[in-house]
Length: 190
Image (cartoon, rainbow, N blue to C red):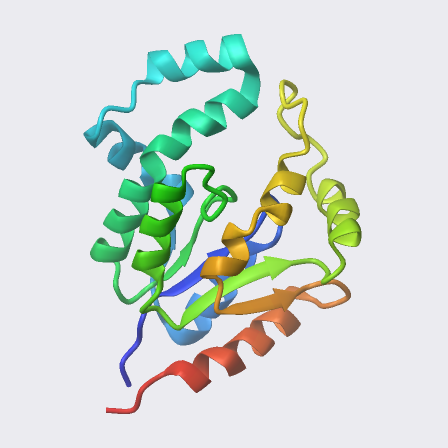
């Protein structure tokens, strides 16, 4: 069996890490979190911690997110190259690029990968946007913007996802089982 990467995208508190842990454990694959690896990748191409702090102090969390997006495409490419046979959960912003060049770059990296899962609580966007804040009781204090509304309404997620899984009224194990069925359909037998 050839195992390609299994990717998880979605807004904040969609369940990417939880589901990735379950699936990778069942498939005996490494679980990689871009949120844990990105900082070294960012620094390799010029990310500056002091500038990031200054941007956040002056513009808040949203300004910091836009600064980080400048480095995301490089980090995504790096993790895909370094971990070709893993389950990789991506931070909430991957897919919601405002810069069309970056979005197309991510699309081209993701195009050959059959197992890209967008996790959302519900097919109803309004319901999704009611559920997600309940899962995040301590959002950044300086976030004066509904970042999940931006992520969910941005076309990027749907452009790069190969499967959408809705998790409302399902346990993580039930969502995991549903996704494993989809993954097994994509594996190639040698």
